[in-house]
Image (cartoon, rainbow, N blue to C red):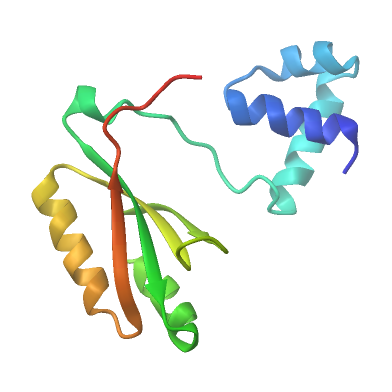
Length: 138
């Protein structure tokens, strides 16, 4: 990792659709060099995906960042189980919760069912949902 790679990551984090030609111009290197760097970042799983940021309210969907507290011995099995749900992303954290799951659903009813299912997983002690009211563009 060098300054250019960190710069590429920052620009792609802000807009994953930034053209490679623009990145090349910005860093003063060839587009081929940018492509190789991005391919390597993807192969090393530094870049693990690309996605759109959606204004859920405008499409009548619901998003929750749900904190999940898990007994330590069940952490891996709970993470595996969450793969079967509508979890958009999952974060292992050192904050207030062991896991934070981004869950996107068609409505509150579906979200409530998913939360109920998570609570039934062995080792889950509690969940703390934070419903997204509005996505703020930075």
